[in-house]
Image 1 (cartoon, one colour):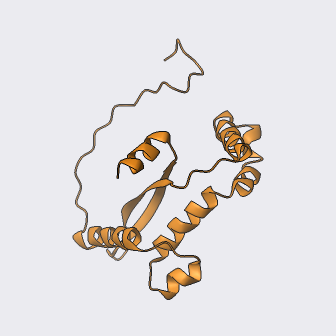
Image 2 (tube, rainbow, N blue to C red; image 1 turned 90 degrees about the horizontal axis):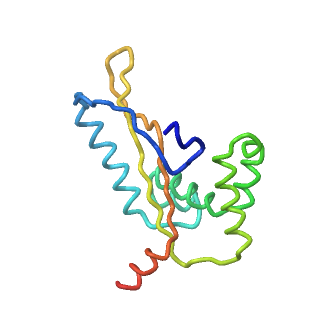
Length: 151
């Protein structure tokens, strides 16, 4: 690694060990139910429509993230200060600008999301599910187009 400073295609993982720890079954089921409700809900036109049809807030937030990811002007403006000092983010904003300026758009997009949860215990011993991070990866790639064409 030291011989190739500045290379973004190389990484080294730190060794670590995970030990199993008890996790309340009720909270595990709750997390699974949240994801299932999100997975099976239809994409709707508005937050109000989602709530009116009994969909979860999680689904509404997923839809918000998806729509924000397509608002190029918003994303560029939101990162204007960051790109002055962060080369990594500046690289992504440059890609975003190139995509916007190319004026090409594919009809299909694959959005992969993962939510990480932890168990919170209050001072009375009650357990609560807490979302700690949301991972989002959106893909538009020729290989996905080819896969879609096969089906």
